[in-house]
Image 1 (cartoon, rainbow, N blue to C red):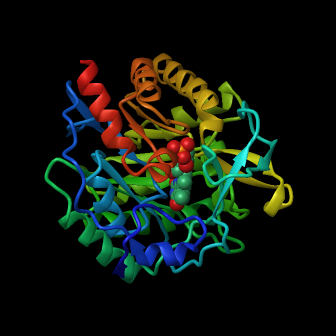
Image 2 (cartoon, rainbow, N blue to C red; image 1 turned 180 degrees about the vertical axis):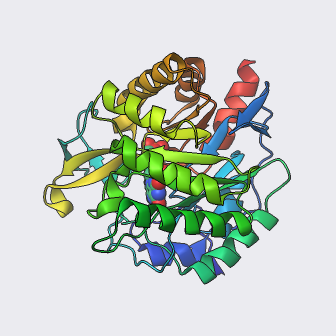
Image 3 (cartoon, rainbow, N blue to C red; image 1 turned 135 degrees about the vertical axis):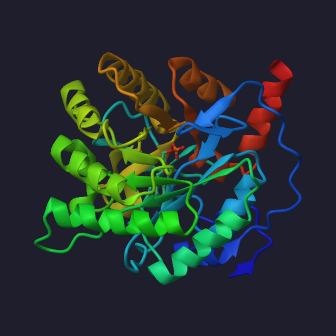
Length: 348
Ligand SMILES: Cc1cc2nc3c(=O)[nH]c(=O)nc-3n(C[C@H](O)[C@H](O)[C@H](O)COP(=O)(O)O)c2cc1C
């Protein structure tokens, strides 16, 4: 892969182009200390800031953002076989009222500076032979105080049972761990994919079976995190949390909120990231923490979705999450992590 002179993901280009044109990791200011003691899946880290699966396409992107104030870096979701990306646009700026649930409508934004976008990649993956070598490279290039998490997903074929899907998840997880992942994240939710892997997190039975299969294949010291979408209601969330509690160490919520997107997508549903989902994701965080607490579950919660500012980070930590992850904000402004840390250390 070549190294480009750009400093951020170029939304006018394809996934493949951006995969090949990661910015250079050097030249960033030193990240300010964040006072306090922090963990991610019980592993010691120096700040509560991380990046979720997606923006970090490969090791070069991981090293770029590791130098920009993030201490947990999640490798974009990988599969047990090659999968091409959807055609561009993969990120389409959108505007409209904040999303308070699934299925509302958003307009294509007139300006690329909009703070929210429709995400449309279809979870592409390199072949395992390629991503496993690159995960090793990612880990080798990370400092001792950074944590590499690798997101995995199954690639169901027609006729597959949940057992088959769980086995495919487990195979990817085993490969990720043996390549250097310190945490494995099983992605149980992808809003843009129409096949079976898109909404596994809405079933307690499926989530429990997958979490158990993956846990059984991971070394004891590697924590398992589960990425979930917005639940339909509290009962459904409770059922899923109870089913996965014996097997997983953390829940990462929320994997975007879907909306019907006018303009280029012609009203198709797409997952939305950014400012449009800030308020609803914070509500979901409160609900999940309440359920985890009521069930006496050891699960930790990682807040994802609509975290755009230092205040958003503090709101989620105050609610009781273990770690906070940002995707859209640092893609719009690669120095968002450095800025949040600088403001924080000054305020303290
Ligand atoms: C460019 C991009 C690619 C993404 N790809 C994935 C992915 O492969 N797997 C996944 O679990 N989530 C993926 N996501 C979702 C993010 O992890 C995150 O849950 C979502 O963007 C909401 O966070 P945000 O509001 O900070 O963007 C992607 C998001 C973006 C922006």
